[in-house]
Length: 264
Image (cartoon, rainbow, N blue to C red; front, side):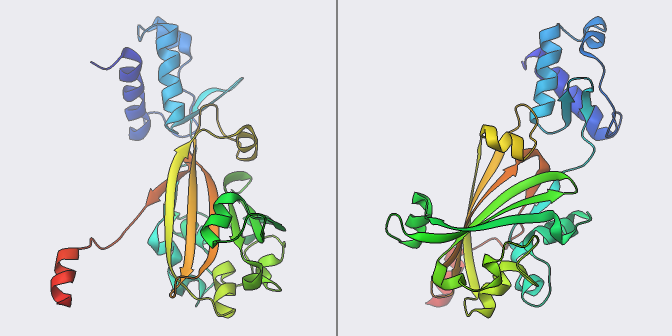
């Protein structure tokens, strides 16, 4: 049997999802649930901490435990990189997510700094560079209104981006179509990429920068972007507040046996 705190958390979660507790509504005080026979103080506290970790509520001194105001953003998979969005239009990846989520956006909700730095070990390894080689680091903080949603730092070989809009630190995407359009115009059309995701506990700096709730984890993204001949033209590391995104992937299911038989 599930522990009592888990049963209480599941019941409250269902009440939140059904709308019985609407966004912005404060959940009952812990002492009220204890007096109502829902369990001990530690049981109710554990249930509330579980709801907070699952992104359903936020807790703060003076405001109690409150149902989150907004549903997570859709973080698209393959569709966010559709060339028609950035090559033929001006819908960079973070904007594609906002459009898919039915949420408003402003281009200057992406701020950035650009520096020429010594490549971190993971970056040097991806690019096949010697230790200490210099790369450009384009670090962005993306916000929804005043609240940060994630950070993304893209690393580039200097010879690919020197003198382009990618190394311009002005707020917002790197001109129309963003960084991928800049690479395209420079003769580096992106063809395929690999994304690796993992969850982890945030650092103290990330808690402050992303304004994370106590106990909230982050999702770290590693993205390697290549041209058709396999040239790596961008390696990016993103740190996302875990409860602020729902990751969505839509793709055709492969049938390698069929493909092999058709090639014979």
